Length: 513
Image 1: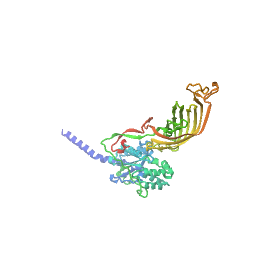
Image 2: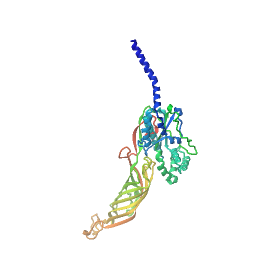
Image 3: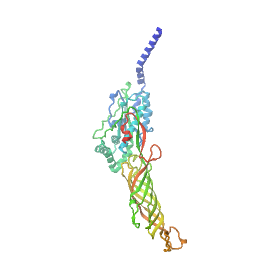
Image 4: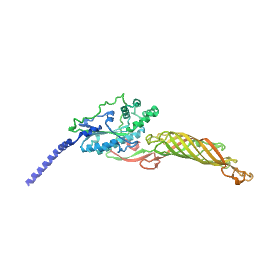
């Protein structure tokens, strides 16, 4: 019995000794096997001794170091085919996990390019930063505590734009910098955005859109890694020896720090995503004030038109129908027309989503050129002896201008003019028999006094070359494209129910949109 007690105590002492020595052994093994030279090739990995050594980076230093993950236009899901994302996912994080490297701090920065509306850009910036932060935190074996993860939002990253132009030696850098100084973005970015759009007659904005804006649609990351004892000498902190930008070099708008909520657990919230217009309905307002000579009274022309909008390009397609159907039996007055028209328009301004993202107004607006064909039938009579009935068709060209009436562009006003060639076949007619006026039967007859056997319908022709239509048209977007599936909807936005993690920005909730 005594021997059994001794064996038990001996076993307990051995277990306690192993537990006391295990951390030191594991640490020695880890430091001995880590090849820190692997991380030198990645400038966005900085080594520090402790949290106290994590120094804030200037905008220029952060831009020089950070790894940019570029997002497609109007998207915030992580682009898995992005070269930098694949580098982080396939090389950096697996190596950190194999080496059991502990991350002391993570800094993320999300941004959007300036061409969209501010609130939509804010949503994109927040979601891009959050998407990258969630992935890196979840994939890293030894992530830092939650309060050591910093997520920054630069809604419209003008500091980065100026830094890129300066680094590229862009000839227009001084102009853009001076505009940033003249129109600070603390309260609103709209004055600065308008100034950039108007500079050089719009040429500067188009070049920025082509050369720089794609690189602004990004989330960037810098990782601070705990320095191993053996790596102290070769792996110093690699912050560029570049002084922070001075006030006379670049005026940077303050980082936008959204209000945050701290629920006890994640929850679901509804997010509203703007849709693109698909089909509009319209009517020509001028047609409702038509005065018909000979008829001697106002004869409004009921009319309706539709226009179909593709996802991009310059062309749209439409159809219209006009139907005045007025009649006065006692006065022998008729103004009855059915006119059908098909048309296509070429807008000088492209309707691509990159040019006009959803929620930023009408994609197709401004000056347009038009081609059309139309056909119809008519019956017009001014009195008992003057009436015409027939059919006709025509073709022509037009020009017009579309002016948005509302901020979102769902209501618009169009000014248009058409001209072309119209040819019709017709026959005159009258009230009562033209051969025997004494024969009264209360019917209408063709004006034909020759032999009935020689009569043929539509013996007369009339040609017209000149203006065929003038319009001031009110337009409303009736249908919108769905985002997540095919089809159309009457609503200009789509509600998506998503889980909101702890600490998510309050402005993401749909009630704030």
